[in-house]
Length: 185
Image (cartoon, rainbow, N blue to C red; front, side, top):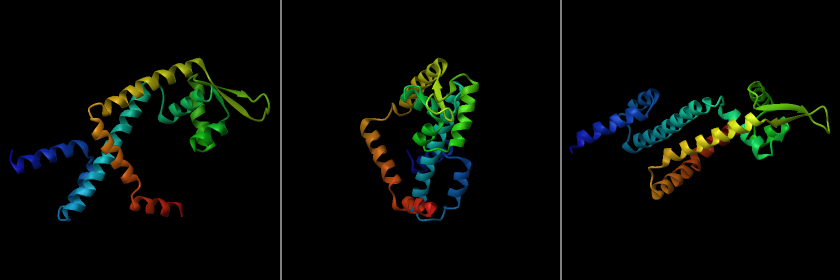
């Protein structure tokens, strides 16, 4: 197979993976050093894969009348024995109580949770997971984990280990850490 044909196949493969915005940015690197161009392309491939997974995840959860946030709330309630306060949910999930309130409103409308006064302190609420809530979270969790497993099914254990190591190395990169520190300042 010729080099030109391989490059064309690689370009077609990239067009299917990368988003339009990434193609625009990569075209600006046409005359950059190959290492820089390859590094940027690899980062964009990783971002595109993550975006594709997130989009598909949202579609799959929507089949159960759930978003990722609503799904995690139900899972957290289930793991806690079916009852927590809104503050406990917010704390466990590292989100604001306002975000929790919005998610709980939708879950209550759908009959997946109930809000009850705390028997010890009536100023507080206890969130209870209902039978339909338990059913939907169990069903969604099973379907979700089977789907996630299928995503990486074709990867050998060696490739999975290599991918995991690469993702951890990227996450621990000094450039990423420096940017995170700048955001926190």
